[in-house]
Length: 251
Image (cartoon, rainbow, N blue to C red; front, top):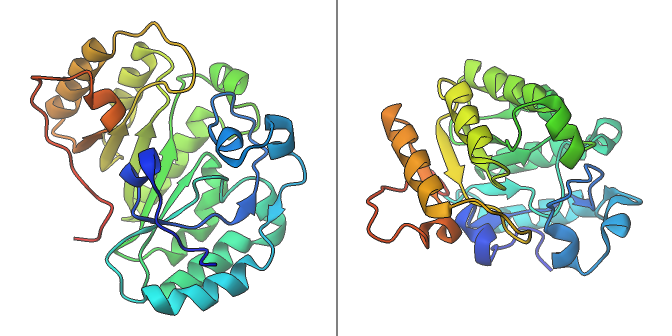
């Protein structure tokens, strides 16, 4: 079975190819969809996190099939490539080396913050670094993402990647509050190349999604910042003009 796979559903809006390096994740984000997707409890999902058995050997076996592809491989959807466990085993760095060896572009999506910076030397011109931003303050982040890097740590990682000339993007999903999301765009607009914007899924929300969508589009366009409105949010924007930027493939 191939460990590089084609995502389906909402995940496909983020990437056309992906690879999951770990079983589970310790970040404990209360909005995480992965336990439901994998049919396990949140407690089971965060326990006994380890590299997937034989993941590097399987990735090296898969890599020649995708050599030279223009589709970026995303690490990771059902785990985080820079959770604390990777500090011990270094699986993510070894995976990136394999992808580079076979000229396979990659994109990292992580809430590990500056833990990811140790591998920035492996990025080429077709690779990208991304993080998820949800909250303005460390306290708010700790409440809903207790073991993930705090907001400023993640922004620092984006800033470091940007300063090295690495393409950057931010996932603004889930949207916890309108104020936080709009403020995060204002705070990071100079160091982020693309904002991918969704809504709150799997949990109730009182947000007026049409009003939010209009505001977030206007803000991105004010700063002349490329953006991608995810389908779940776009459903509320009938009649609103916007232009999505697709970075799932290398231009």
